[in-house]
Length: 262
Image (tube, rainbow, N blue to C red; front, side, top):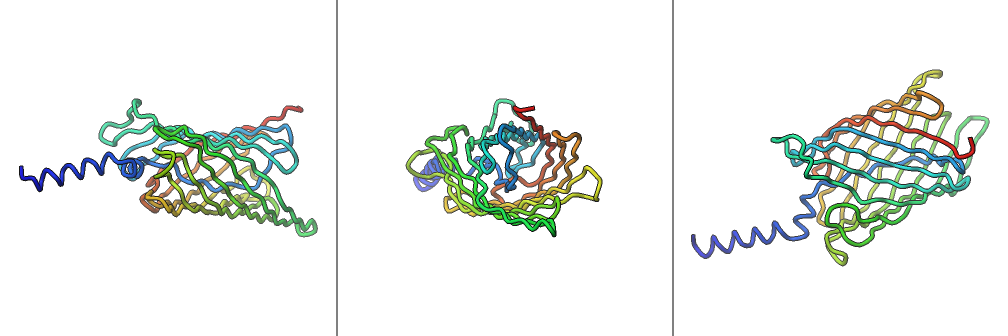
């Protein structure tokens, strides 16, 4: 083997093992636009999603996605958002030796303004959600931060919420090479029929990274069924449009609400 070939192979090996390349190769969970719903004081809501996703690198992922909302006051709630995945190449199916936990987001959601037209049953709302990102993903270091501004519009039981914000995630190094970007999306909730317990759920979300991570853009659509006053069951389909996220998948969700004062 010539010296030129040896140098090329050595350079390729170094690049493949560098933090930036390793970080770019690691699949990243998608940004999920949120709503402006705030839980009443003393009320808890646990949202759980389980499903199978096909990633851009041909791996498959089983996805437990957990979100806990805790109402603290009329305009403030505490949110805990995390995700855990089991990853494996398509040639072998699932590989239980490759867990893929995501960083944990501990955030406060705050309602800033709420204007209502009671006569027409319409409303505008403004809020924000922000807080630190705790390094739970593999080989990540240093705390991150994510913040969103939320603009909501509702008429009756229908809601549309615009999300705009930015993130800096924990990375492979504390001082450099950390995932960072601008994120945005729309969350939609539309009741189906006047007396049915079904609601259409949809979202469009994306991240334009200023780091070396590939950009994300995806759409979801599905249905939610209000099984009881405090329990919702949902089925959501996902389609990824850019290389930074999953290609497609399906998620089964369960949302359970309970109050300390009942």
